[in-house]
Structure formats: C-alpha cells, structure tokens
Length: 380
Ligand code: MN3
Image (tube, rainbow, N blue to C red; front, side):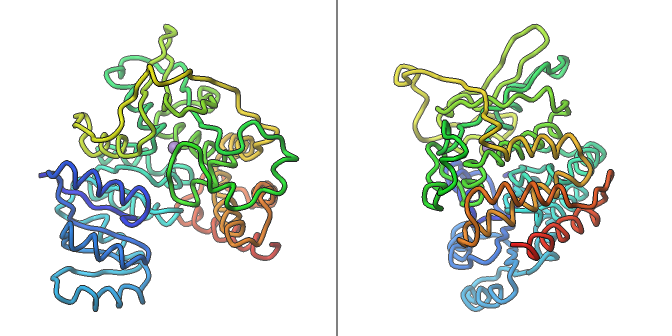
C-alpha cells in the first residue's frame, strides 16, 4: 500500500485528493495537515485514520484534541508541526496543497527526507524554484505536478526524455472576464470574479484566474519544472479547457493531453505515476464539443500576466515580490478593502519599490515576502 501525507487536506485540492484515495482504496493516508478547519479535519480523521495530524492554528489544535479525545491520533501544530507531517517516516509521497509561501519550508524538508512531492503549491517553485529543483535532483526525488496544465505537460513528456522541448503551449481558460477591456473591469465585484466558467477551485486561485495572475504563476512554475526558457512558454487562451496544455517538439509535432476539467485526474496521475487507473466521472466526448478555440492573451487588459513575465525575466526575488503582493492584494479585495483593478496596481507598485536580490536564499525569500506585506500594509 502506498502511503501519503497531505498538507492542506481541507482545501479544494486536499479534499479531491481524499476523494481519489477513497475511490481507489489502496492508498494509506498517514498524515494530514490543515490551517484551522477542524470540523472537516475531524471528519477526515475518522474516515481515513491518519497516525498524525497538524492543525497550524494552535488554539484550533486544542479544540480538535477535545473533539477527538476518543481516538489515538497525535496532534501537532504550527510550522514545526507542518514539517513533522511533511517528513513522517512511513510516507512515500507528500501532497503539498497548502496555499501560499507557507508551503516552501515543509516542501524542502520533505525533499530532504526523500519524499516524492505531489506539488499543488505553486508558490514553492515560483519563489524558490532555484532552490527546490537542484535539491530534488540531488535527493533523487520526483516532483510530480498536480496543477492541471503542468500535469498535462508532464504527461506530454512521457517517453520523450531523449528529445528537446521546442515550445510549451500553456493553455488558459481566460477566466470569467475574457474578451473584456480594461474599462469594463473597473467595477468588478467579488461575486463576478469568483464565478469561474470551467473549474471549481479555492477562492484565491479563482480570483487569480480572473486576473490571469494565476497563469503568470504557472508560467514561472513551468519554467522551473521543465527546465525551459521563458520565451519557450507560450500562453494560449483556450476557453473550453479541454486541451490542458501541450508540448511542441523540434520536428513540429505537438503532443497534448485532453480531458474534461476535473482536478482529480492530475491528482490521481501524480499519486500513481506512471500508472493510470480508472477514474469515475464524465468522459471527454468529442462529438459533444462544438469546437475548440484559441486566442492570444490580451496583455494590455490582463496586466497581471505581463507583470508576471517581467518578474520572471528579472528573476531573483522578484517573483516572490510578485507573488506576495498578489496574495496580499487578493486578500484585500476579498475583504472589500480595494477595487478589483487595484490588485494589479499593488503588484506593480510593490515590484517597483522592492529591494532586489539576485540569488535569494530561503531566509531572504521569506524576508522579501514580509517586506512586501509591510510595504502594502503602510499604503493600502
Ligand atoms: Mn492550473
């Protein structure tokens, strides 16, 4: 039986990972970690019987202890607890599905403990790809992408390790505001931005999809995961979300992965790689599809993607600034403190005002995040 630990088990990816585990029936969950949703965590504990769990929030951990006093489950807390779950001796794969830069430290520890990583935490590679990728090679662990686009690319690379990638075609649905111009985005409300046409995801990533910041983060993620240059990554707006991404090789052949938009597929593929298992749910029906369409991204309206390319080109700690500023700005937007387009203003202004570091170590990356938060906190 394959043994796994899940960081971020109560979030969207965490929940769907457990759906896959329940459906397949031959994976043992040894550890779970969440931020503070102990009601759901308790259900998960009773169903999947992990040996150890982490509740990041210390007070919530105390409440959980009372709620599950009838069980013999070890409860740990905080960053140390998260790292404990990431490095449990018996686990083989760690699913990193926490939101934000919180995921970096536990991921590094998991790699050092020789765990394969099913990576759903974008921030890890965006901000620390230059640390994570060499470390994973040194430790001989696999980084298995869970993001649907990166999983599609990963699947399109199967058996191609002798061949050079010419180009990566990273598809994007375009989000709910595709086709709109900048002026039409000024009065966007939270409800509009949370209404994604194809994918059901957590709030933060849904907002990020609407601004195309998510695609920007994915460009950076792809650069690290597949070792390509930025200009080899082309974002293709494909509103039907059927082609999940593709790879073009030197001879012009384009290999893609297609399917219905269902996150359980990339999750399951990462957990069982290189094997494919049956997966319940709707299958792709080509006859049902009217057509597949493609557009260039509109960078003058969706400036978040343009800024992402700028941050990625600059490198160093600039992607960290980009990511931290966006994280803070999206939180402010969800709190109704700022308008929709101010998300982009905040990212741009943070990038213009940061202290640039060319080769940041982990401490400097976390320090950059802190300084970016402070910069925004003083102004917005
Ligand atoms: Mn994605």
